[in-house]
Length: 234
Ligand SMILES: Nc1ncnc2c1ncn2[C@@H]1O[C@H](COP(=O)(O)OP(=O)(O)OP(=O)(O)O)[C@@H](O)[C@H]1O
Ligand SMILES: [Mg+2]
Image (cartoon, rainbow, N blue to C red; front, side, top):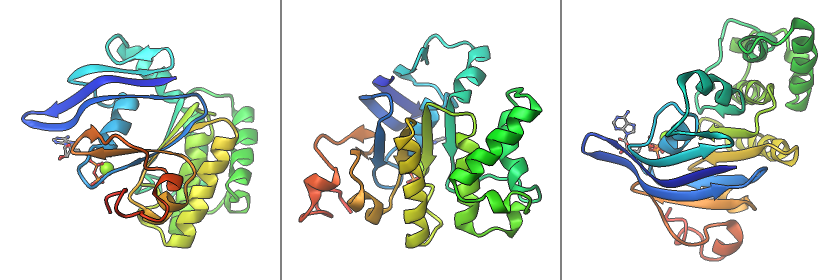
């Protein structure tokens, strides 16, 4: 469903990712790890078609970075949900509004919006907070709103860029559980994270980047148990 074929992205002399090749299958959950500056955000931005490869091709479903038209990028993004570390919500609007916006911008009829937003808020455990302003919520709750917004249009992939970076360990675990649940519902997930505890507990495929390149080997929890730290490079 998703593939990177010999993808490099440079900014002048600075190479953000170098000759990346990998596939993500429909419904897969991938954890993307690597030190600061390794290229994790760049990978997510390439998938989101915010930036384009300097060489190589990124394919998402029927769309490819070398042939996609500007008019198709908006259509592609409807199939992608993006969750940022810093939430990016409208703080003085309600929880409901923040999620509904994602449906309004794609022209969904009002009655469909009302029903679906409630459904997705229930999934993330925030239905009772629907009328509250986002500014009144805790960090973990705000991140749940951001996840609800990312899921509301039923994307086939959820891109999450260090969504637990600003949260305490228990709240981070809750957010991770939500991503897992979305994945069980059929949404592919690509989670970029530094969170050692999540990586240690994760049962998913782990891709490790170092200086923009994929590090060969198996970094999943099963493979690193007993000698974690060494293998994950933390
Ligand atoms: N817009 C840009 N202009 C110039 N260099 C950039 C730009 N975006 C990223 N880079 C460079 O590309 C490299 C990879 O950056 P990226 O943001 O993908 O790393 P990251 O793994 O997400 O790091 P972090 O964990 O700190 O978020 C870094 O060396 C960064 O300086
Ligand atoms: Mg980053």
